[in-house]
Length: 149
Picture 1 (cartoon, rainbow, N blue to C red):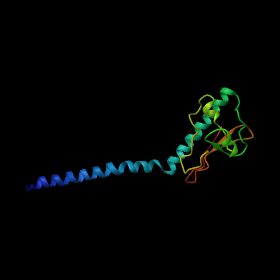
Picture 2 (cartoon, rainbow, N blue to C red; picture 1 turned 60 degrees about the vertical axis):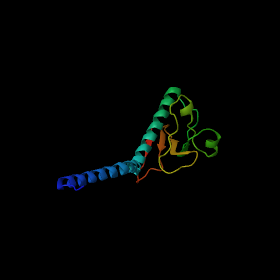
Picture 3 (cartoon, rainbow, N blue to C red; picture 1 turned 90 degrees about the vertical axis):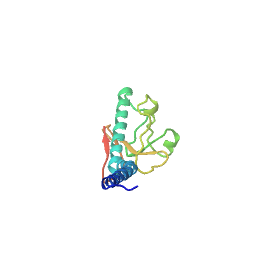
Picture 4 (cartoon, rainbow, N blue to C red; picture 1 turned 135 degrees about the vertical axis):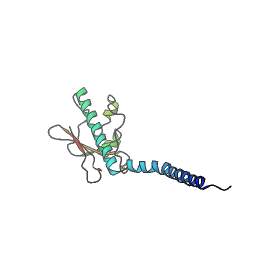
């Protein structure tokens, strides 16, 4: 079968379009995943996590007037669990936010590198004036991420 000039041009154009579409279809999701996993996007998650923790702590205190544990005076890692494992590692146990009225479904965990079995990657301290400071020490790209309430 011999193609005319118009038919050949149409085949070439369709081939280029199909090839381009296949490349875009197969690389697009990978590129989107890479964009979503940037230092900026991880820092945004960190800021949102700290805001969520701060709101949960504020609501708990409003509902109960006090926390069931003494919050540390210096920056202390927040535990992802509860009990002896938190205590033995000297981590802050905020599990009351999960079990004491469902203020959170889970303690948020830093989206960056692995931080260990019990550490969330976030820190907490109670300042002398009673306000609470939450920090994300693994913030990237020179960012300082904290919430004080």
